[in-house]
Image (cartoon, rainbow, N blue to C red; front, side):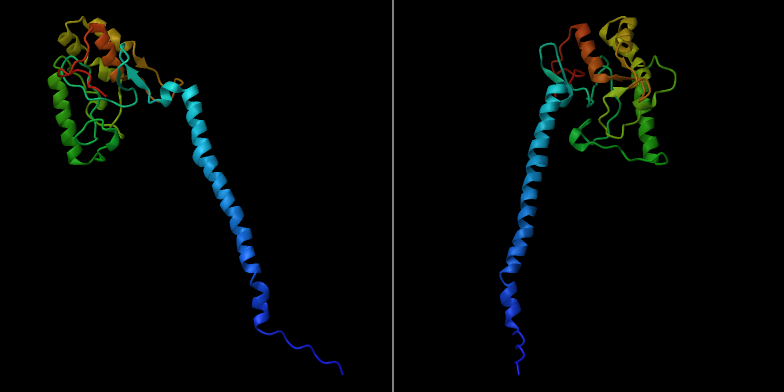
Length: 229
C-alpha cells in the first residue's frame, strides 16, 4: 500500500516565508521613499523657486514688498503697511492696535474689543477728543477710521473724508494754501478695485511723501517727520 505523505513540519512555512517578507517590505518602501524624495524636490524646491522667479520677473515691485522710495532712492517704507505720524505738519493715519509699537508687522492684530465693550467706547471717545483738539476747524462728525483701528492694525489707508479733514491743520502748519494741500489729497484718492471692490481710499505714507516733496523738506528725525523704515 502506498504510504501517506507526512504533514509539513511547523518550521517549513517560516523557512519559506523568511526571505519573502523582507523582500515584500522593501518592494513597498522603495517606491514610497522615491515618491517622497521626488515630491520634496518638486514642491519644496522647484515650485517655490519657480514662483519666486516668476514673481520677480512679472511683478517685481509687489513681490519685493511694494516699497516706497524717496527721490534719492532711500526706502521710506511699504505702501502696504502704515506708519505712525505725529506733529501738525503731517497727515495722520488711523490708530493701530499692535501694542506698544504702532504698526508693528510682527504683532499684527486688532483690539478684539466688541461694540458693547465699555473699553472700546472709552478709547473711541479719547481718540475723538484728540481729533477735535487737533482739528479745531472741523465741527462735523468724525470719520470712524480716525478713531478705530483696523483688524490688522497695519492699515496704511484713510478714507478721503478723513484725509480731507486734516487739510486745514497741515496747510496752516506748512504755510501753504489750503486748496493746494486739498488738491494734493484729491489727486491721490484711489478708486475701488474694478470700480466695485472696496471703497475710495488714500495711502497716508504716499500722501506724506508727496507733501514732503511739495514743501521741499526732507525728513531728518524732527518730530513729525516720516520715520525711517
